[in-house]
Image (cartoon, rainbow, N blue to C red; front, side):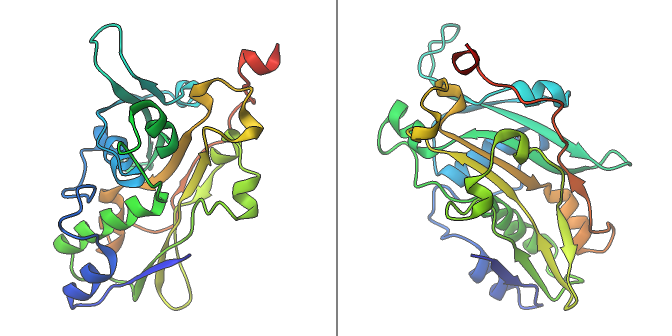
Length: 249
């Protein structure tokens, strides 16, 4: 379902429409540090408090090859955590426009850490909405009539049924403005349930995934105050399809 939040001078209207309850332990309380963005996205989108770590990739190629994993007892630290992967997209001036996050789905987290450790899975645009609500506190005025959060990974959509990792990486337009001066913020989510029968030949790191492309808070703030243009494109076509050895052998 498309989500829309009014960009009106009455700040309380936007906050009541776009934020979670203040008592929600999974609410976003501050704009994330750019190098920790996917850590907060994992918590918000899959509603988990399991400890997380993130590797921020400078190389797109290494990000493509990476997989989010569950470390139930890491040999080096004897600690359990979720290992995430993050790639930052930049404009020509070097500003971050968006983030790509390889995260774990709630069902796989529950299998590893217990039924109360995560879930239910939300949507990628839940993170975008949370970011927008915090920005509105700092930037109550906007150049747009409304902000619209376009659907991402609805499981009943044809795009989601046909989604695979390389397709998730394809370029797409992050923001646009329609004829009524509504700002549209797009996401592209990719989810694979751990027990999905189509992927049972794949190793655990290839299943139970929840991937998101998300707008950078600073970029959204610049768009709202008119110091940045809409139309940034994030994503890149991967050079080739990579399959695990359990499938190729």
